[in-house]
View 1: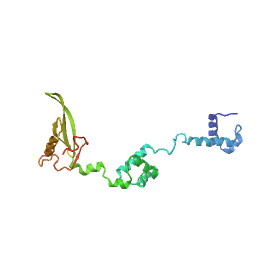
View 2: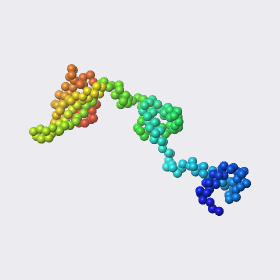
View 3: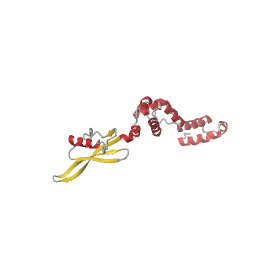
View 4: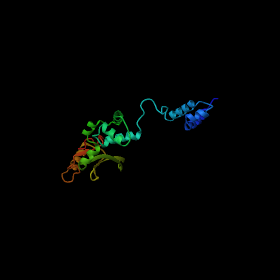
Length: 210
């Protein structure tokens, strides 16, 4: 008698509950050993993840990877072992090599190099009162020659959000920029007086505003 897979599953489930001794008394279609072997195979199939896995080592879950990156960014003196221990405390076991691979993919250096560098956030926090940012925007103006585009150079003091329009011109010439520099560094009213850092976007107009 040929049994279907579904029939085998049902028989295996019932056989496990009866036990070997009772099966020996009532089994007529197949032997108790066969029924119990079917049960073991069903259990093995349930927990067999080989079909779901791709080639090579399975990737770390995305949320755990984000956690590794966050720990390294927020704690620049934490090495692989320290991150490994912190993950273990919240129930995640990762090898040191896996942690190293994650940080390398995200361009994060090992702890000794990270510890020696200042992050952009730390730099802003430490020098907030000394930073001014600058950029251009354009406006279209109707003139006697028709519609003409003008450049507007502005500066913003980060600590106060104070914005100052430094100048408006159709062409940002050297003479124009030199005059703006003198205005901004005026000892009484100059926005740049007492400042140390000027942030710009490397545009040709603003690469050397002073």
